[in-house]
Image (cartoon, rainbow, N blue to C red):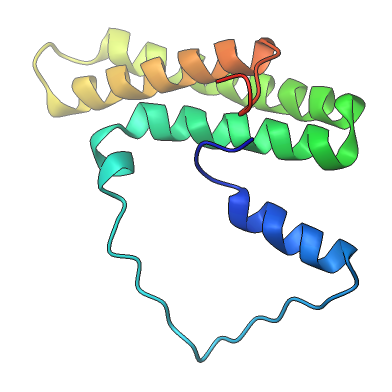
Length: 124
């Protein structure tokens, strides 16, 4: 049910539920030479992360805990939407900071809308 993100966390969770152990080996390094999709489509990547987070939470902890997570994410997004929106309004036209503020405003608006909806990774 995951498009992107949380599939590794889900896998580890299922391994532990089956009675096996998950080990962290800090001396081993894995280099992921990807991430091109997420870098080109940052807003979509952020929303995919949140959808997967909501799906994982509902799958293992139930709809009540998912609703609580959505409430927390909604509050955080609302605060950041106001903060970045005000920065956008009061910055001078054409500045790089104003463009950054606009991007953050869009991200938090979409995140808030997603958190207030009932969509999960499987629904996307």
